[in-house]
Length: 466
Image (cartoon, rainbow, N blue to C red):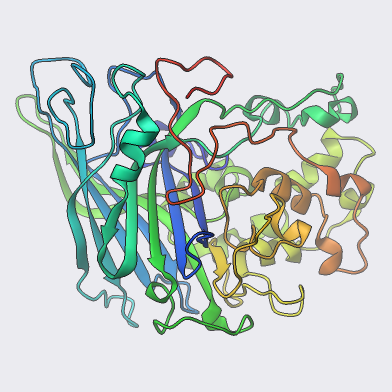
């Protein structure tokens, strides 16, 4: 979770595995949208000597859907190249790395290019992509206090690169910002704060954040809102369809790989999508095991076939079984879950919540939907729309949003009465959480927002490192 090792095949290919996607109006630059796509899940900070890095053979993409047919209107493509500056050592670095441009001791620096593709009205009409930049430097991973001293001051801002027309980009290691009790949730759906009510009961306990002290690799992009709207203008009407964009990220590999004994392997053929992610937990929790790999390979335009899993989610049936007597109303409800279909697949139509909508049409697609006319919240709530914070999930997703609690409550029926007034939510539905708090590295108040990566030499199990 959110999408860490969520499908059988992609769990074997972490370099191409989407873990989280965020999309929000930038709080310190509200005329822009920030989109963050994380990859390479569950990174141990002390994972040397072959530390984590982006794949040179992977096409990473951030897609913006601003049309009613669910196809991307704009895509941003990222390709990486690793250079070996010293072929005679097994080490990532042979001395302190003093700056992002210091390759004296840094043996595996990475660079990347950024391309923007404007998609045409015809499905096969992809207009020539615009190369926004080449050979942008990634920061090193946070090896430790001797190898990468004063990491936050030295590398983070240096790895933020300006792109044409007011865009900014960052690609490199960051601290995991997602928190979840991985060990307990996948132990028969145990929520530690409520485990005395579990079918196999035990004393209640505080949630344990399984993502604490871990890192990810982030591609963060900040662009003017006008860069991603359908007509290139800044919308002002909250109820207009042009005010809503959909966002998802993907990773693709060449169709075939030819392995050689005495020379480099050869990748050939067109790129084929192997991973994608829009809403948190969609493939992780909604799609059953037999369809997870297929879901990862398909675009959102094919999501009609997955509506049945949202309409009758397995987790909604499991909660009354795992917590006997706690969810009687949920157990008795057999209608399709129109509330979840709206949240995850179509967006919420105008009129359901005062001053808000992020509806993209009746055609289902797993997308983060962001209404760009809604300004950032001065004092945001981690519960987003559930706490009347219109700028929070499922209106896009901010780094602070507690998506585990929000989606647990939604699946349990907390918002279902807004769609079906005949349903009364069980009292427990509005209280559910995994009991974890955001005790990861602190977020930044500016781009790229995710915190300083945990240090390999200072990490301890369950203890965040500086």
